[in-house]
Amino acid sequence: MSRAFFNLDRIDPDGLRRVASALRSAGYSERGVQERLCLEDITELELEAFPFLLKHRLRKRSPLDVAISLFLLQGKATEEELGELFDTAARRLLRKSKILAADPTDRTYLARVSLFPLGEKLFFTDHRYAHTAWHKARVDRDPVMFLDTDSYWLARSTVRKPVRNVLDLGTGCGLHAILAAESAERVVGVDINRRAVNFARLNATLNDAWNAVFVDGDLFTPVGRERFDLIVANPPCVAAPTYRLSYRDGGPSGADVLRRVIAHLPDHLSTEGTAHVVTRIAERDGEPYLDRIRRWLGGANMNLHSLRVEEQSILEFAIKHTKHVFGERYERYSRELMDWVTNMRAQRFRRVISVVLSVQWNEDGPHSPWTQEDECKPPTGDFALELARLLHAKRRVRSLPSLESLSGMRLGIPDDLLLIERRRPTGEGFDTKDFRVEFKHARMSTELDVKPLVRDLLERVDNRATVPEVIQRLAEDTGQDVAAIDERCRKALLVMFERGLVTLDELSSVSSGHRPTGVPSGPPEAQRTQVQSGIDPRSISTDASSGELFLPQDDGQAPN
Image (cartoon, rainbow, N blue to C red; front, side, top):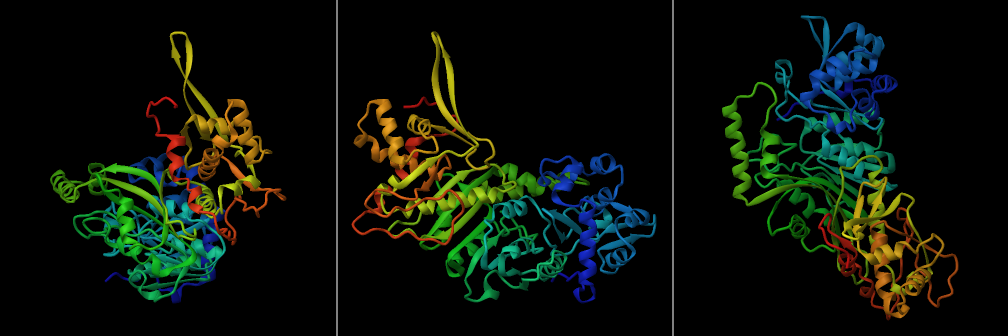
């Protein structure tokens, strides 16, 4: 059984918040740390770089340098340096609460826990590394997970909007529950590790998340049959030959906990709710991981979207989880590595995929639930806004009563979209190889190789024309009959809208005989579209059109 660490009854909440205020005043934030350590992203921080960072990046020993050294790089600070960062009352609180420990041999202080920044918020966790004798002696049997790459990815991918209640499964240090508390009436964080619940409660005080409560228990068990508007989870998901770290290891397949999370989403997600899960999942040849997730959902009428962020071979994955940087014995490493590889190979796994999963109930009338995968770069900044746009676009397209509804829409093009023609030399000059669209600021679908129909439609959009006007221009310019190309163009425009290539806005007045249904370009509001009787909504399905509009990346094909 792990030990609770903080005696919360003896810690002054106001004093703790003053500690956080002093750190923020010194510049201790996600951006401040990145700039001071010259990192592109805080997730780049690795133990191998600590000696250089401590000796060169932090050599000025400013208050910010001291804070980074003490709470993030697991270094030391003198009494004088602490005095520059904290007042007397704050230093006394840090010592009394066992956050700081004195080293009597050289009159310095070390942090018994780490403090990770995410945005302007701060989160206490157990140390990420136990690379010295002092740190190894203080490793708990069931430590509270540090903020790693997955933690930041989930924070950056979660769509934020006002909701009634939120559930954070496997809350750990309380990170995602506390982030959600800003836009929710009530947040519940659950963790089977009582030590994690203790840390989460401290962090809620530190960040003034008064509406976040934390309970110990196994996944959904503590919340009974309650449903939530937002569910977030970063479950243990490492395919490990043995259970060693409860916050990391998900059994031999890596899916022991993930399977249970996915299987119970239909029982706990509200009608308008969204679940976001960041995880790593092993994949076999001929068995896409999304098929496994669909089976775990048990036939529930839910839409499933996946962002494929990274991919590792089983050897790369095994090396990452068995390599110890300092004081490593080769024989031990060799045995451990082979145990990990053998475990993966025995289950016929070929690769490990890092994904961001989003699950919502299917509200698309007679449409069957959809499953879609997109590739993207690691989430940064306002990535969640792009994900919100994609999920909303998918739902709004499928809720249209018919393709004729597009007649009341005006087309636009995002400001950061570029249409590029790539040409190749021939004996007599240059021929067009293909066309590509690029987004200067996007993190999802930053580059797409497109076929001529997409190029032809984009070139005729001027942010003023309606859908029929754009199709009419294309027909006139190419000498085709409007009736012959109308349906295909409308389907293509819907796919382009889903991919973010165009915007669709409802006109204030439309001369067509039916009531138009708009497809806004921003995040969703609480609105519905009634399906008209007598029209088969399946006629506007975009699935078949997608393959006709986009080429695989760098496949060398010429447009057809």
